Amino acid sequence: MRFGAAALCLCLQAFALLPLQAGGQLGGAAADQVQMEVLHAPQECHQKSKKGDLLNAHYDGYLAADKSKFYCSRTQNKGHPKWFVLGVGQVIKGLDIGMLNMCPGEKRRVIIPPSLAYGLQGYEPAKIPPNATLIFEIELYAITKGPRSAEAFTQIDLDSDKKLSRDEISDYLKKEFEKDGKKRDPSVHGTVLVDIFKRNDHDGDGFISAKEYNVYQHDEL
Ligand SMILES: [Ca+2]
Ligand SMILES: [Ca+2]
Image (cartoon, rainbow, N blue to C red):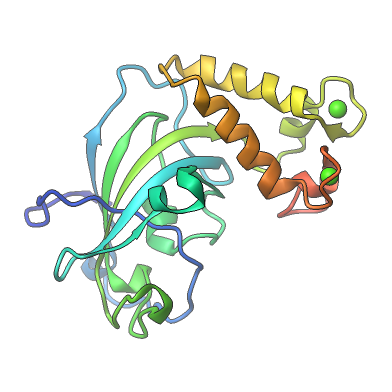
């Protein structure tokens, strides 16, 4: 990974979580590098994102060619930041690479070659043309242990009844937010909590079961 060369220092904002699309053809060396530029680094960083972590982030995506914006997470899902697991192919490869070792509160610009994005085919639903280099601007809000972690589940499940209540997750979030010491609008807590249930409480019973929580791997709980 190289940090931003020249070019592309326009006032771009970028970063998108679109469904992974096949078609990226991995080819030569330099053309397959993700370039990153830290736009804002928090004063303190107690934790850096790693593969398998569950990240909460906002992002905008731009086409490098004409700087047009093709995606903005802030205009979706009532402005709630997106949740996704890093490094498992939930996002395009370039983002799985470009969001590694990131601190909560950090803003980063990532430039992704087509081979690590939507390749020669492009991605029509998002109006991404063939062979497009993409630019994302990412703001990372929170890092939590990913859903693969049985340890994370038992940590949150204070009464050990093998399901996570709203209060338990609320407590957990409070602690996570305290850890990075970042000032947040009080509404963020509620917003994140609602998001978690929306994404995980599939049967709508108000609890996140071990099975619901452990979406990506089923052999740990
Ligand atoms: Ca519980
Ligand atoms: Ca449930």
